[in-house]
Length: 278
Length: 248
Image (cartoon, chains in turn brown, cyan):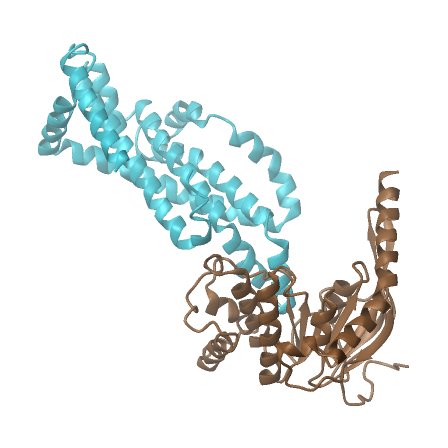
Protein backbone atom coordinates (compact mmCIF):
# COMPACT_ATOMS: atom_id res chain seq x y z
CA UNK A 1 0.00 0.00 0.00
CA UNK A 2 2.82 2.39 0.86
CA UNK A 3 5.77 2.03 -1.43
CA UNK A 4 8.72 4.04 -0.15
CA UNK A 5 9.13 7.18 1.90
CA UNK A 6 6.63 9.32 0.06
CA UNK A 7 3.19 8.55 -1.15
CA UNK A 8 0.92 10.60 -3.30
CA UNK A 9 -1.15 12.30 -0.65
CA UNK A 10 -4.83 12.11 -1.41
CA UNK A 11 -5.29 15.41 0.34
CA UNK A 12 -5.14 13.83 3.77
CA UNK A 13 -3.50 15.77 6.57
CA UNK A 14 -2.57 12.65 8.47
CA UNK A 15 -2.52 9.06 7.31
CA UNK A 16 -1.96 6.04 9.52
CA UNK A 17 -1.12 2.83 7.66
CA UNK A 18 -0.89 -0.68 9.16
CA UNK A 19 0.28 0.72 12.48
CA UNK A 20 1.16 -1.81 15.19
CA UNK A 21 2.89 -1.39 18.52
CA UNK A 22 4.10 -3.98 21.01
CA UNK A 23 6.20 -3.42 24.07
CA UNK A 24 7.64 -5.45 26.90
CA UNK A 25 6.17 -5.06 30.36
CA UNK A 26 7.06 -7.13 33.43
CA UNK A 27 8.93 -9.53 31.15
CA UNK A 28 5.90 -10.15 28.94
CA UNK A 29 5.18 -8.92 25.46
CA UNK A 30 2.12 -6.69 25.29
CA UNK A 31 0.48 -5.95 21.98
CA UNK A 32 -0.99 -2.47 22.41
CA UNK A 33 -2.12 -1.76 18.84
CA UNK A 34 -2.67 -4.05 15.88
CA UNK A 35 -2.89 -3.02 12.25
CA UNK A 36 -4.51 0.39 12.69
CA UNK A 37 -5.53 2.33 9.56
CA UNK A 38 -7.21 5.70 9.31
CA UNK A 39 -6.88 9.06 7.59
CA UNK A 40 -7.71 12.52 8.81
CA UNK A 41 -8.57 15.52 6.64
CA UNK A 42 -7.24 19.03 7.11
CA UNK A 43 -9.21 20.89 9.77
CA UNK A 44 -11.06 17.78 10.90
CA UNK A 45 -11.75 17.10 14.57
CA UNK A 46 -11.47 13.37 15.28
CA UNK A 47 -11.91 11.65 18.62
CA UNK A 48 -10.59 8.26 19.59
CA UNK A 49 -12.62 6.40 22.18
CA UNK A 50 -12.33 2.96 23.67
CA UNK A 51 -12.22 1.05 26.91
CA UNK A 52 -9.16 1.54 29.10
CA UNK A 53 -6.30 -0.51 27.77
CA UNK A 54 -7.25 -0.03 24.11
CA UNK A 55 -3.96 1.72 23.39
CA UNK A 56 -5.42 5.22 23.01
CA UNK A 57 -2.52 6.94 24.72
CA UNK A 58 -0.02 4.69 22.94
CA UNK A 59 -1.55 5.74 19.62
CA UNK A 60 -1.23 9.41 20.51
CA UNK A 61 2.39 8.96 21.58
CA UNK A 62 3.08 7.24 18.26
CA UNK A 63 1.43 10.10 16.38
CA UNK A 64 3.51 12.61 18.34
CA UNK A 65 6.65 10.61 17.55
CA UNK A 66 7.61 10.09 21.19
CA UNK A 67 7.80 6.34 20.57
CA UNK A 68 8.51 4.51 17.30
CA UNK A 69 5.95 2.07 15.84
CA UNK A 70 6.77 -1.63 15.81
CA UNK A 71 5.48 -1.79 12.27
CA UNK A 72 3.52 0.53 10.03
CA UNK A 73 3.83 4.14 8.97
CA UNK A 74 2.43 7.57 9.68
CA UNK A 75 2.31 10.25 7.01
CA UNK A 76 1.93 13.93 7.76
CA UNK A 77 1.02 15.97 4.68
CA UNK A 78 2.07 12.98 2.61
CA UNK A 79 5.54 12.85 4.17
CA UNK A 80 6.78 9.96 6.26
CA UNK A 81 6.93 11.05 9.87
CA UNK A 82 10.04 10.42 11.92
CA UNK A 83 10.41 11.41 15.56
CA UNK A 84 8.79 14.25 17.46
CA UNK A 85 8.87 17.94 16.69
CA UNK A 86 7.49 20.05 13.91
CA UNK A 87 3.97 19.62 12.67
CA UNK A 88 2.36 18.22 15.78
CA UNK A 89 1.92 19.32 19.36
CA UNK A 90 0.65 17.23 22.22
CA UNK A 91 -1.67 18.48 24.92
CA UNK A 92 -0.84 16.23 27.84
CA UNK A 93 -3.33 14.61 30.16
CA UNK A 94 -1.74 16.15 33.25
CA UNK A 95 -0.88 19.71 32.40
CA UNK A 96 2.88 19.14 32.80
CA UNK A 97 3.68 22.84 32.99
CA UNK A 98 7.19 23.83 34.00
CA UNK A 99 6.68 25.02 37.59
CA UNK A 100 9.57 27.50 37.41
CA UNK A 101 8.09 29.35 34.43
CA UNK A 102 5.19 31.77 34.44
CA UNK A 103 2.23 31.38 32.10
CA UNK A 104 3.71 33.39 29.22
CA UNK A 105 7.06 31.67 29.51
CA UNK A 106 5.41 28.22 29.54
CA UNK A 107 3.43 29.11 26.44
CA UNK A 108 6.64 30.29 24.73
CA UNK A 109 8.36 26.95 25.36
CA UNK A 110 7.78 25.38 21.92
CA UNK A 111 9.13 28.26 19.79
CA UNK A 112 12.00 28.68 22.25
CA UNK A 113 13.03 25.04 21.65
CA UNK A 114 12.96 25.82 17.92
CA UNK A 115 15.26 28.83 18.61
CA UNK A 116 12.58 31.31 17.66
CA UNK A 117 12.61 34.13 20.20
CA UNK A 118 11.73 37.22 18.18
CA UNK A 119 9.25 39.98 18.86
CA UNK A 120 6.68 38.29 16.66
CA UNK A 121 7.01 35.16 18.80
CA UNK A 122 6.32 37.14 21.96
CA UNK A 123 3.23 38.66 20.41
CA UNK A 124 1.99 35.30 19.26
CA UNK A 125 2.48 33.77 22.71
CA UNK A 126 0.48 36.64 24.19
CA UNK A 127 -2.18 36.05 21.53
CA UNK A 128 -2.61 32.40 22.52
CA UNK A 129 -2.69 33.27 26.23
CA UNK A 130 -5.50 35.62 25.29
CA UNK A 131 -7.21 33.03 23.08
CA UNK A 132 -7.46 30.52 25.95
CA UNK A 133 -8.90 33.28 28.12
CA UNK A 134 -5.96 33.92 30.43
CA UNK A 135 -5.20 37.55 29.66
CA UNK A 136 -3.95 39.20 32.83
CA UNK A 137 -2.42 35.94 34.11
CA UNK A 138 0.75 36.09 31.96
CA UNK A 139 3.04 36.56 34.96
CA UNK A 140 1.34 33.98 37.18
CA UNK A 141 3.09 30.74 38.03
CA UNK A 142 1.38 27.35 37.56
CA UNK A 143 1.04 26.79 41.33
CA UNK A 144 -1.04 29.96 41.51
CA UNK A 145 -3.59 28.67 38.98
CA UNK A 146 -6.56 26.32 39.20
CA UNK A 147 -6.59 22.96 37.39
CA UNK A 148 -8.77 24.34 34.60
CA UNK A 149 -6.50 27.34 34.10
CA UNK A 150 -3.42 25.11 33.99
CA UNK A 151 -5.05 22.99 31.27
CA UNK A 152 -5.70 26.18 29.30
CA UNK A 153 -2.00 27.01 29.53
CA UNK A 154 -1.20 23.43 28.43
CA UNK A 155 -3.45 23.98 25.40
CA UNK A 156 -2.00 27.41 24.63
CA UNK A 157 1.52 25.98 24.83
CA UNK A 158 0.62 23.35 22.21
CA UNK A 159 -1.16 25.89 19.97
CA UNK A 160 1.77 28.30 20.16
CA UNK A 161 4.04 25.66 18.61
CA UNK A 162 1.83 26.28 15.53
CA UNK A 163 1.23 22.59 14.87
CA UNK A 164 -0.51 21.28 11.77
CA UNK A 165 -2.14 18.67 13.96
CA UNK A 166 -3.11 19.13 17.58
CA UNK A 167 -3.00 15.94 19.64
CA UNK A 168 -4.98 15.90 22.87
CA UNK A 169 -4.63 13.15 25.46
CA UNK A 170 -7.71 13.24 27.71
CA UNK A 171 -6.84 16.82 28.61
CA UNK A 172 -9.98 17.36 30.70
CA UNK A 173 -9.96 14.05 32.57
CA UNK A 174 -8.76 15.55 35.83
CA UNK A 175 -11.21 18.46 35.80
CA UNK A 176 -14.53 18.58 37.62
CA UNK A 177 -17.69 18.08 35.53
CA UNK A 178 -18.65 21.76 35.22
CA UNK A 179 -15.15 22.96 34.34
CA UNK A 180 -14.89 20.15 31.83
CA UNK A 181 -18.06 21.25 30.01
CA UNK A 182 -16.79 24.82 29.80
CA UNK A 183 -13.42 23.62 28.55
CA UNK A 184 -15.08 21.49 25.87
CA UNK A 185 -16.95 24.43 24.39
CA UNK A 186 -13.83 26.58 24.72
CA UNK A 187 -11.84 23.94 22.84
CA UNK A 188 -14.41 23.98 20.02
CA UNK A 189 -14.18 27.74 19.78
CA UNK A 190 -10.36 27.74 19.90
CA UNK A 191 -9.80 24.98 17.33
CA UNK A 192 -12.30 26.67 15.02
CA UNK A 193 -10.58 30.05 15.43
CA UNK A 194 -7.08 28.63 15.07
CA UNK A 195 -8.24 26.31 12.23
CA UNK A 196 -6.50 23.26 13.62
CA UNK A 197 -6.75 19.61 12.78
CA UNK A 198 -7.27 17.85 16.09
CA UNK A 199 -7.07 14.30 17.37
CA UNK A 200 -8.71 13.97 20.74
CA UNK A 201 -8.34 10.90 22.92
CA UNK A 202 -10.99 10.39 25.59
CA UNK A 203 -13.02 7.75 27.34
CA UNK A 204 -15.97 10.14 27.70
CA UNK A 205 -18.37 9.29 24.91
CA UNK A 206 -20.45 12.47 25.17
CA UNK A 207 -17.28 14.55 25.05
CA UNK A 208 -16.18 12.76 21.87
CA UNK A 209 -19.56 13.22 20.17
CA UNK A 210 -19.86 16.85 21.19
CA UNK A 211 -16.43 17.82 19.87
CA UNK A 212 -15.93 15.65 16.81
CA UNK A 213 -16.58 15.39 13.12
CA UNK A 214 -15.76 11.71 13.41
CA UNK A 215 -15.34 9.29 16.31
CA UNK A 216 -13.03 6.30 15.95
CA UNK A 217 -14.07 3.48 18.28
CA UNK A 218 -11.25 1.15 19.31
CA UNK A 219 -11.34 -2.42 20.58
CA UNK A 220 -9.70 -3.47 23.80
CA UNK A 221 -6.11 -4.72 23.68
CA UNK A 222 -4.71 -5.20 21.14
CA UNK A 223 -6.32 -1.94 20.04
CA UNK A 224 -7.88 -2.09 16.60
CA UNK A 225 -10.24 0.25 14.84
CA UNK A 226 -13.68 -1.21 15.49
CA UNK A 227 -15.93 1.33 13.87
CA UNK A 228 -15.85 4.83 12.54
CA UNK A 229 -18.84 7.02 13.44
CA UNK A 230 -19.45 10.23 11.51
CA UNK A 231 -21.09 12.89 13.67
CA UNK A 232 -23.42 14.97 11.53
CA UNK A 233 -24.40 17.56 14.08
CA UNK A 234 -24.43 21.14 12.81
CA UNK A 235 -21.65 23.55 13.81
CA UNK A 236 -21.07 25.75 15.69
CA UNK A 237 -22.34 23.55 18.50
CA UNK A 238 -23.67 24.87 21.78
CA UNK A 239 -23.62 22.86 24.97
CA UNK A 240 -27.40 22.24 24.73
CA UNK A 241 -26.83 20.11 21.64
CA UNK A 242 -26.06 17.42 24.23
CA UNK A 243 -29.77 17.21 25.07
CA UNK A 244 -30.97 16.70 21.47
CA UNK A 245 -32.24 13.24 20.40
CA UNK A 246 -29.62 13.00 17.64
CA UNK A 247 -26.85 13.53 20.18
CA UNK A 248 -28.27 10.87 22.48
CA UNK A 249 -28.60 8.47 19.54
CA UNK A 250 -24.89 8.93 18.73
CA UNK A 251 -23.76 8.41 22.32
CA UNK A 252 -25.99 5.33 22.70
CA UNK A 253 -24.65 3.85 19.49
CA UNK A 254 -21.04 4.37 20.55
CA UNK A 255 -21.75 3.09 24.05
CA UNK A 256 -23.15 -0.17 22.58
CA UNK A 257 -19.98 -0.52 20.51
CA UNK A 258 -17.81 -0.02 23.55
CA UNK A 259 -19.80 -1.85 26.21
CA UNK A 260 -18.62 -5.28 25.11
CA UNK A 261 -15.05 -3.99 25.00
CA UNK A 262 -15.27 -2.52 28.48
CA UNK A 263 -16.46 -5.88 29.84
CA UNK A 264 -13.62 -7.64 28.06
CA UNK A 265 -11.20 -5.01 29.33
CA UNK A 266 -12.24 -5.60 32.93
CA UNK A 267 -11.79 -9.35 32.43
CA UNK A 268 -8.40 -8.78 30.84
CA UNK A 269 -7.20 -6.64 33.71
CA UNK A 270 -8.39 -9.23 36.23
CA UNK A 271 -6.58 -12.04 34.38
CA UNK A 272 -3.40 -9.97 34.17
CA UNK A 273 -3.52 -9.11 37.86
CA UNK A 274 -4.02 -12.81 38.63
CA UNK A 275 -1.13 -13.79 36.34
CA UNK A 276 1.10 -11.21 38.00
CA UNK A 277 0.35 -12.50 41.48
CA UNK A 278 0.52 -16.19 40.55
CA UNK B 1 6.32 38.77 66.72
CA UNK B 2 6.62 35.73 69.04
CA UNK B 3 10.10 35.14 67.64
CA UNK B 4 11.22 38.63 68.64
CA UNK B 5 9.68 38.17 72.07
CA UNK B 6 11.51 34.89 72.50
CA UNK B 7 14.86 36.52 71.61
CA UNK B 8 14.24 39.40 74.02
CA UNK B 9 13.33 36.98 76.79
CA UNK B 10 16.51 34.95 76.22
CA UNK B 11 18.59 38.15 76.27
CA UNK B 12 17.01 39.16 79.57
CA UNK B 13 17.63 35.68 81.06
CA UNK B 14 21.23 35.83 79.90
CA UNK B 15 21.73 39.19 81.59
CA UNK B 16 20.04 38.08 84.84
CA UNK B 17 21.96 34.79 84.93
CA UNK B 18 25.24 36.62 84.42
CA UNK B 19 24.51 38.97 87.34
CA UNK B 20 23.13 36.42 89.80
CA UNK B 21 23.98 32.71 89.95
CA UNK B 22 26.57 32.73 87.12
CA UNK B 23 28.44 35.80 88.29
CA UNK B 24 31.96 34.32 88.14
CA UNK B 25 33.71 36.51 85.50
CA UNK B 26 36.17 33.70 84.74
CA UNK B 27 33.47 31.42 83.34
CA UNK B 28 30.52 33.52 82.22
CA UNK B 29 29.68 37.05 81.16
CA UNK B 30 26.32 38.83 81.16
CA UNK B 31 25.05 40.16 77.85
CA UNK B 32 25.95 43.76 78.78
CA UNK B 33 29.61 42.76 79.32
CA UNK B 34 29.65 40.95 75.99
CA UNK B 35 28.26 43.99 74.16
CA UNK B 36 30.76 46.20 75.96
CA UNK B 37 33.61 43.91 74.90
CA UNK B 38 32.28 43.95 71.37
CA UNK B 39 32.34 47.74 71.14
CA UNK B 40 35.79 47.78 72.75
CA UNK B 41 37.14 45.36 70.15
CA UNK B 42 35.40 47.34 67.42
CA UNK B 43 36.92 50.68 68.40
CA UNK B 44 40.37 49.09 68.61
CA UNK B 45 39.84 47.92 65.02
CA UNK B 46 40.62 44.31 65.94
CA UNK B 47 37.06 43.05 65.54
CA UNK B 48 36.80 44.34 61.96
CA UNK B 49 40.01 42.50 61.09
CA UNK B 50 38.76 39.26 62.67
CA UNK B 51 35.44 39.50 60.86
CA UNK B 52 37.14 40.26 57.55
CA UNK B 53 39.58 37.37 57.90
CA UNK B 54 36.88 34.82 58.77
CA UNK B 55 34.58 36.17 56.08
CA UNK B 56 37.31 35.92 53.46
CA UNK B 57 38.12 32.33 54.40
CA UNK B 58 34.48 31.37 54.36
CA UNK B 59 33.51 33.06 51.12
CA UNK B 60 36.52 31.85 49.10
CA UNK B 61 36.13 28.27 50.33
CA UNK B 62 32.37 28.32 49.90
CA UNK B 63 32.34 29.76 46.37
CA UNK B 64 35.08 27.47 45.04
CA UNK B 65 33.51 24.42 46.69
CA UNK B 66 30.06 25.27 45.29
CA UNK B 67 31.34 25.72 41.75
CA UNK B 68 33.38 22.52 41.86
CA UNK B 69 30.55 20.55 43.50
CA UNK B 70 27.92 21.70 40.99
CA UNK B 71 30.27 20.96 38.09
CA UNK B 72 31.06 17.45 39.33
CA UNK B 73 27.38 16.84 40.13
CA UNK B 74 26.45 17.81 36.57
CA UNK B 75 29.16 15.54 35.14
CA UNK B 76 28.03 12.64 37.34
CA UNK B 77 24.43 13.10 36.26
CA UNK B 78 25.43 13.21 32.58
CA UNK B 79 27.73 10.20 32.55
CA UNK B 80 26.69 6.87 34.01
CA UNK B 81 30.25 5.58 33.88
CA UNK B 82 31.65 8.56 35.77
CA UNK B 83 28.83 8.32 38.27
CA UNK B 84 29.51 4.66 39.01
CA UNK B 85 33.21 5.41 39.25
CA UNK B 86 32.82 8.28 41.72
CA UNK B 87 29.79 7.05 43.66
CA UNK B 88 31.59 4.93 46.32
CA UNK B 89 33.94 7.80 47.07
CA UNK B 90 31.24 10.39 47.29
CA UNK B 91 29.09 8.21 49.56
CA UNK B 92 32.04 7.43 51.80
CA UNK B 93 33.47 10.94 51.95
CA UNK B 94 30.07 12.54 52.48
CA UNK B 95 29.76 11.03 55.94
CA UNK B 96 33.41 11.54 56.90
CA UNK B 97 33.74 14.19 59.63
CA UNK B 98 36.10 16.42 57.75
CA UNK B 99 36.89 18.73 60.60
CA UNK B 100 39.10 15.83 61.67
CA UNK B 101 41.46 16.53 58.76
CA UNK B 102 41.85 20.19 59.71
CA UNK B 103 45.14 19.58 61.57
CA UNK B 104 46.45 17.65 58.57
CA UNK B 105 45.59 20.50 56.21
CA UNK B 106 47.27 22.96 58.58
CA UNK B 107 50.34 20.71 58.55
CA UNK B 108 50.40 20.69 54.75
CA UNK B 109 49.41 24.26 54.01
CA UNK B 110 50.69 26.10 57.08
CA UNK B 111 48.76 28.34 59.42
CA UNK B 112 46.76 30.85 57.43
CA UNK B 113 44.32 31.49 54.63
CA UNK B 114 45.15 28.47 52.44
CA UNK B 115 44.58 25.89 55.18
CA UNK B 116 41.40 27.54 56.39
CA UNK B 117 39.97 27.85 52.88
CA UNK B 118 40.84 24.19 52.31
CA UNK B 119 38.89 23.13 55.40
CA UNK B 120 35.85 25.17 54.35
CA UNK B 121 36.12 23.76 50.84
CA UNK B 122 36.21 20.17 51.95
CA UNK B 123 33.23 20.45 54.31
CA UNK B 124 31.10 22.39 51.81
CA UNK B 125 31.81 20.41 48.65
CA UNK B 126 30.07 17.14 49.55
CA UNK B 127 26.60 18.31 50.60
CA UNK B 128 26.42 20.54 47.51
CA UNK B 129 27.68 17.74 45.25
CA UNK B 130 25.25 15.14 46.61
CA UNK B 131 22.29 17.49 46.36
CA UNK B 132 23.19 18.61 42.84
CA UNK B 133 23.53 15.03 41.72
CA UNK B 134 20.33 13.79 43.29
CA UNK B 135 18.42 16.80 41.98
CA UNK B 136 19.58 16.01 38.45
CA UNK B 137 19.18 12.26 38.84
CA UNK B 138 15.54 12.69 39.89
CA UNK B 139 14.54 14.79 36.90
CA UNK B 140 10.83 14.78 36.17
CA UNK B 141 10.30 12.20 33.39
CA UNK B 142 7.03 13.82 32.37
CA UNK B 143 8.60 17.23 31.86
CA UNK B 144 11.46 15.69 29.87
CA UNK B 145 8.81 14.11 27.65
CA UNK B 146 7.19 17.51 27.14
CA UNK B 147 10.52 18.87 25.93
CA UNK B 148 11.02 15.85 23.65
CA UNK B 149 7.55 16.33 22.26
CA UNK B 150 8.53 19.85 21.21
CA UNK B 151 11.66 18.45 19.56
CA UNK B 152 14.21 19.47 22.20
CA UNK B 153 17.84 18.35 21.90
CA UNK B 154 19.66 16.63 24.77
CA UNK B 155 21.38 19.92 25.62
CA UNK B 156 18.03 21.74 25.69
CA UNK B 157 16.53 19.02 27.86
CA UNK B 158 19.38 19.58 30.28
CA UNK B 159 19.39 23.37 30.29
CA UNK B 160 15.62 23.90 30.15
CA UNK B 161 14.24 20.97 32.16
CA UNK B 162 16.76 19.06 34.22
CA UNK B 163 18.92 21.89 35.55
CA UNK B 164 16.09 24.27 36.50
CA UNK B 165 14.31 21.29 38.06
CA UNK B 166 17.39 20.51 40.14
CA UNK B 167 17.92 24.11 41.30
CA UNK B 168 15.84 23.76 44.48
CA UNK B 169 17.95 20.71 45.42
CA UNK B 170 21.15 22.60 44.67
CA UNK B 171 20.07 25.52 46.82
CA UNK B 172 19.17 23.11 49.63
CA UNK B 173 22.70 21.73 49.29
CA UNK B 174 24.12 25.26 49.46
CA UNK B 175 22.12 25.83 52.63
CA UNK B 176 23.67 22.76 54.24
CA UNK B 177 27.02 23.93 52.90
CA UNK B 178 26.67 27.31 54.59
CA UNK B 179 26.11 25.71 57.98
CA UNK B 180 28.97 23.29 57.55
CA UNK B 181 31.26 25.96 56.12
CA UNK B 182 30.81 28.16 59.18
CA UNK B 183 31.73 25.24 61.42
CA UNK B 184 34.71 24.73 59.12
CA UNK B 185 35.91 28.29 59.65
CA UNK B 186 35.76 28.01 63.45
CA UNK B 187 37.45 24.62 63.55
CA UNK B 188 40.14 25.61 61.08
CA UNK B 189 40.96 28.71 63.09
CA UNK B 190 40.92 26.83 66.39
CA UNK B 191 43.59 24.50 65.03
CA UNK B 192 45.92 27.36 64.25
CA UNK B 193 45.49 30.96 63.21
CA UNK B 194 46.72 34.51 63.69
CA UNK B 195 43.40 36.29 63.25
CA UNK B 196 39.70 35.62 62.70
CA UNK B 197 36.65 35.07 64.89
CA UNK B 198 37.76 31.51 65.65
CA UNK B 199 41.08 32.94 66.75
CA UNK B 200 39.24 35.42 68.96
CA UNK B 201 37.36 32.50 70.56
CA UNK B 202 40.61 30.55 70.95
CA UNK B 203 42.61 33.24 72.71
CA UNK B 204 39.65 34.45 74.78
CA UNK B 205 39.28 30.90 76.06
CA UNK B 206 42.96 30.68 76.88
CA UNK B 207 42.85 34.04 78.64
CA UNK B 208 39.74 33.17 80.69
CA UNK B 209 37.84 35.99 79.01
CA UNK B 210 34.29 34.67 78.55
CA UNK B 211 33.08 38.06 77.23
CA UNK B 212 35.49 37.88 74.27
CA UNK B 213 34.53 34.24 73.75
CA UNK B 214 30.85 35.12 73.60
CA UNK B 215 31.56 37.93 71.13
CA UNK B 216 32.92 35.30 68.72
CA UNK B 217 30.06 32.87 69.35
CA UNK B 218 27.35 35.53 68.94
CA UNK B 219 28.89 36.82 65.70
CA UNK B 220 29.11 33.30 64.28
CA UNK B 221 25.49 32.69 65.20
CA UNK B 222 24.47 35.93 63.50
CA UNK B 223 26.53 35.04 60.42
CA UNK B 224 24.78 31.67 60.29
CA UNK B 225 21.33 33.24 60.51
CA UNK B 226 22.25 35.85 57.90
CA UNK B 227 23.67 33.33 55.45
CA UNK B 228 20.75 30.91 55.76
CA UNK B 229 18.27 33.78 55.33
CA UNK B 230 20.15 34.91 52.22
CA UNK B 231 19.91 31.41 50.76
CA UNK B 232 16.20 31.24 51.65
CA UNK B 233 15.74 34.51 49.80
CA UNK B 234 17.40 33.01 46.73
CA UNK B 235 15.26 29.88 47.17
CA UNK B 236 12.04 31.89 47.15
CA UNK B 237 13.17 33.69 44.01
CA UNK B 238 14.15 30.63 41.98
CA UNK B 239 11.61 28.14 43.30
CA UNK B 240 8.51 30.06 44.36
CA UNK B 241 6.34 26.96 43.87
CA UNK B 242 8.28 25.16 46.59
CA UNK B 243 8.63 28.05 49.00
CA UNK B 244 5.59 27.00 51.05
CA UNK B 245 6.67 23.43 51.71
CA UNK B 246 10.25 24.36 52.48
CA UNK B 247 10.13 25.66 56.00
CA UNK B 248 12.87 23.41 57.34
